[in-house]
Length: 243
Image (cartoon, rainbow, N blue to C red; front, side):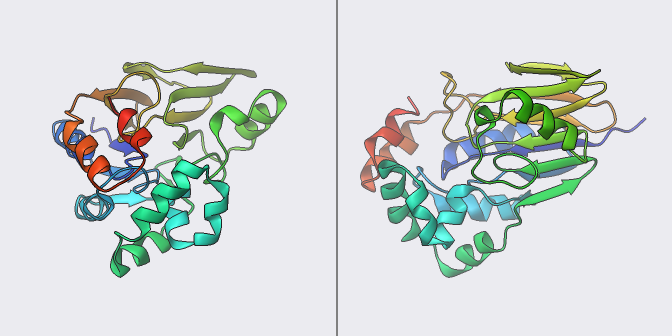
């Protein structure tokens, strides 16, 4: 029996080296379709190259809050000063075709019984997974039209599940998980700017028929990315996070 396997990435943030490493790993996984949960840009030094590569590799992308800020400058007020400075510099690196591509990204995609959104369902690019707790988390899971929702935005690996009436949030580590029944919101971590204490690039595979999740950690050398961040005058904090 054939199984539809999806590769899902998020929060590449202009980190070309991390993205290239993830793509090399994906190439060996027998993947049929590829999705990106947004934030192609921000923090990192190669926004144009990342956008171009995502398009050439056939990723179906949704809009992240950093992508939105590049095309809607009024939304810059939502960001902290370091992120705002980074986005202002990065906006000058993005040409008009890339800007139009970002502006045309949808807030969510529904396909293969899954919802793909940057922040939190149903369609938020700004709401953080960790902000939604208690009764609000239960309502979100119960209200999901789909059994599976993939999110990014926090740059961490987490899952919240509703199974047999019980809501269970917990962290994820590298490895495979069988999600046989219930509803699940899965936070897939970050390719280009991880914040979970491990500098590896993170992404996930999803087997649609088996409902099997695999969390992948991909090692890469961040030194070239760090050097480019500093050379462009982007905040040093965005470089040190990669080390």
